[in-house]
Length: 360
Image (cartoon, rainbow, N blue to C red; front, side, top):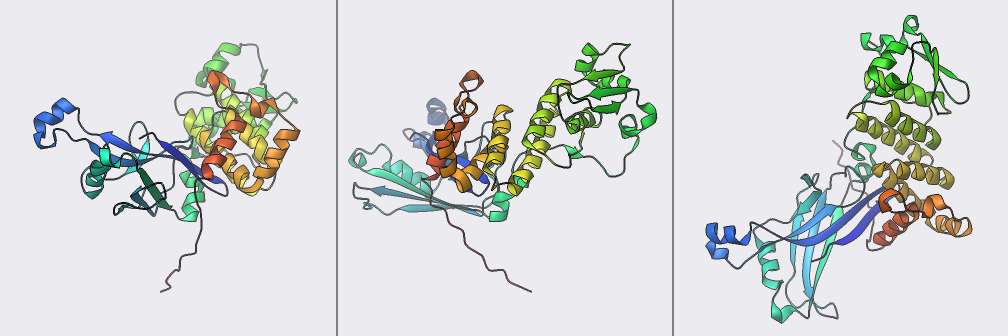
């Protein structure tokens, strides 16, 4: 069975899914040795897995699969079977995160009895999936991505002396607007291959290609302390500068944690500014161009939920290569990504309901 894709979307959160019947188990020659009674049988499972750019998905309250065999008029020709998956996060492996039916049991036996049976080849296998989330979990930024950087502590210890103590400041990093960020030249030299390559003994300042002083502050704070010092206000332009500057001057494998912190900070701003379509569009371009997948799909959700008709009209009246052009290595265009997710969302019937809370 080829995978079928669909999307669940609510406000500023979106999850891409694909569902398929997977034929699994050991290779045939091994299975015939250790389990000869199942010599001619395969193990079939219904597998629902996340398939988008988002790093982490919220836990489900429940997932119910209903499998039916129907004729052309949608009439059931045999009793359907149901399976309810336990609540929680999906099972993870090195390739994906998924929910699946058991390898053995009634569902496997049902699938075994209908797949490949000649008498049933003119009928359809209909799979209905009911996924139940808590809305707070679905929208929480805690479930947006897997790794984030540590916040800058309130009380600064010796690790922050080179950054904060003015007695150590003997150098300035300059923005394109002429603003200067005081810092320690030797610390820059030791911490970053970029500065080791570009700084000379005579220099007392060095210009970086950024407009915002906050971009330098965030990037250098992370480089020297591996903690995230959030700017007071995060704009799409500032986020873009921080990411690009970090990739130039930053160090080591922990850069992904800083990008995770930036994604979450931008997500907070997206929630605050979700009614401003231009803001959402600009943030989407930043997420797309810098491969911030979790933030990118959050922006998709926001446009689909609040702005899709206006967005479509805007793209027709004001076409922009930034949205329509493919990226490097045939990366999907921004516009195509939004339209694909919108179309997949039409396959889903969504509803919300309040749950009663018992008081003690």
